[in-house]
Amino acid sequence: MIERDAHGGLRIGGASLAALLEAAACGTPAYVYDLDGMAEALADLVRGFGDAPHLVAYALKANSAGRVVRALAEGSAGADVVSGGELALALACGIAPSRVVFSGVGKRDDELDAALAAGVLAVQAESVEELERIAARARALGRVARVSIRVNPGLEVDTHAHVATGHDEAKFGVAEADLGDAWSALERNASTLALTGLSSHVGSQLVSTDTYARAAEQLARLARSRVAAGAPLSFIDTGGGFGIDYGSGCPARPADFAAAAVAAVRREGLGHLTLVVEPGRSLVAPWGLLVASTIAPKVSRAGRRWLVIDAGMNDLLRPALYQARHRVEPLVGAGDAPRAAWRVVGPVCESSDDFGTHDLPAEPPGAVVLRDAGAYGYSMASRYNGRPLPAEVFVRGGQVVGCTPRASADDWVRDRLAT
Image 1 (cartoon, rainbow, N blue to C red):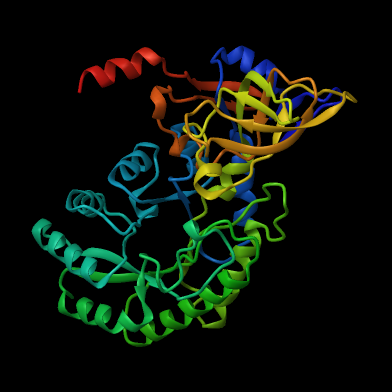
Image 2 (image 1 turned 180 degrees about the vertical axis):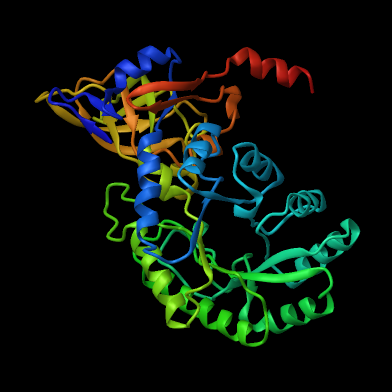
């Protein structure tokens, strides 16, 4: 739980955030994660499946910290991976290969080889051409590849264009018009390819189950026809994309998406198949904070106010990339002190290094917190402008259980000189 105490101080996992940061002695900018909150989010999602067979394949791209992945694996999560590195991390964190799906439109041959050698639940094919590539790698390794075809349902969702993936111009998945070619490719390669699943993913930050349910219904109907044709399907993967409340509301809970998918599958008489979902953001975003120190205020004679902080777009890219808005709050409560509208900006030499205008104490706070930053924060971070990667602090039971220190500028200089 992330909340404020009676004095206005932020608490995470039942402990003072300021005290946890002092104990970690990691400086700022720093991501702080509540592992207990993430585990409870997973448990709440699982309850949405009822008694339906299911697999929650956590999307590692949202947050790939080992402690996060292990905490979710302990709570029964599998993994959705999109690279050889993510596959190796998932396995190293104790996730069984049979609970891993390998997605992504551009898998290299060595990544396909690693997935086939590990024996993942399925390699999710995104095109007819990729089916042929998977078959070729399986022949070279003397294996039969378990594959799932990612179907592009041709559905528009109300989300940012950069995270809408189910429309007919997206690079993802096999369009309905091309599925006949996919079935033919499977028949040609019957000795090396086994179709064990069908999948789809319409986009991210979905705040309503409507389009998700429609895609699940399409996929279930298609699966029923494949089963009738003799395909040995063992699962249906309806993807992820469950939204969270970034401050403007999110009517649907992750468990609602699970229940909608279960209903769609059961209507087609396929309740015996395992239902796979691929949440990332919804399991980790609300349980992560980015803490930043104030570098300096800047006030113009025209009355404009900027609050320059030490976290920038290289630490949290979402606002620059997606025009996302994260709530910004003072680390320490200011009581009834006068407020003012501050434009919160970072130190990076780009106009897009801007976290928006927020109501904050008129007397600039010494440190601020950017809420809901547990997903696509550190995993997208870079060392642009020669800035070190931020620190990461992991909290469990109200105590710091791990800390990844902030790198130093010297590390960056050494790396650059070595090139």
